[in-house]
Amino acid sequence: MRRATLTNDFSWSKSRHEKFSECLRAYYLYYYGSWGGWEAGASKDVRELYVLKKLSNRYSWAGSVVHDCVKDVLLDWQAGRQVDPADVEARARKLMQDDFRHSAKKSYWTQKYRKTFTGLVEHEYAEPVPDEAWKQNWETVRQALGWFFSSRWPALARSLKREQWLEVDAGFDFSSFTLDGVKVFAIPDFAYLDEAGMPVVVDWKTGKARDGYDEQVLGYALYVSQRYKFPVEKVRTSLVYLNEGLEQNVHVDLAAMEAFKARFTQSVANMRGMLTDAATNTPKESAAFPMTEDVSMCVRCAFRRPCGRLEAAAQVYAQQQAQKAAEPKVA
Ligand code: SF4
Image (cartoon, rainbow, N blue to C red; front, side):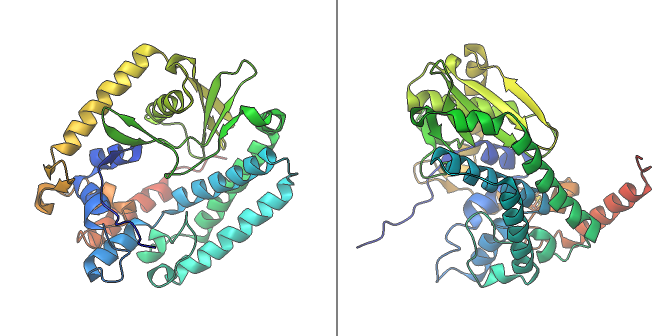
């Protein structure tokens, strides 16, 4: 059977918008410069960008482990299987230990590993991360899972009838819709129908509450309304902060949707403004995508070596660590 040729088609997502807003060079390297790096015949530079773009940092790693665990648990409940929280915690711990070893050896340069994790920028760039920080990272995962199991969500999920489940982190191949002719990726962590038959979209968060998340769930609401044919204002959305034990409902109304669509249209126009040919999604030369002047952005960026920002980022990192160490400790 012939394999379909992959083409770098233009699409939009909240994370793409964020990258575009934060550093144009990172955006270019992530969406264009690294394209094709998986091919056996890829050039060394492209291959390097591709491997680097797949790396996580320790915070996003912790978040993705929690997401993967909660996803598996929800799928178990959907299938009517029993779940033991202690087993889930033990599996998460083992997974992170295996991930850490794989990453510390930099095996991501030579071996395939697992879909949602390849390695860590901290190892790639030999960052001096104290043991305490690695332990804290595990604590973040443990606490998030602990709160999840003690929250209202397990009882709610187990009470859902088969027809009330819509989707659980269904992935890029499934969760997308078209807005003004543009493919938009919006992958809700959990979507179901409440007792009244109306859709609810849930997004799990491991970090602290921050701006921009509302925007993300508005995109999910639009996706769910299109895919499952509900008026968008009937979709309820919930941001659940697993480490803070907080839930925040984001109000979806027509005015919020109009504002979302206006920002989306502007974001797409800005991105397309950086193309020489919109039909083939061909970008301008890399020089048209300047590196950010804010070196603090480079501290967690996977592309700091190809950008020549290794030393500058290391200096800022050292300053940040010194500042942290000087902060008074809260008892
Ligand atoms: S290292 Fe800095 S300049 Fe380079 S892509 Fe990353 S954030 Fe942008």
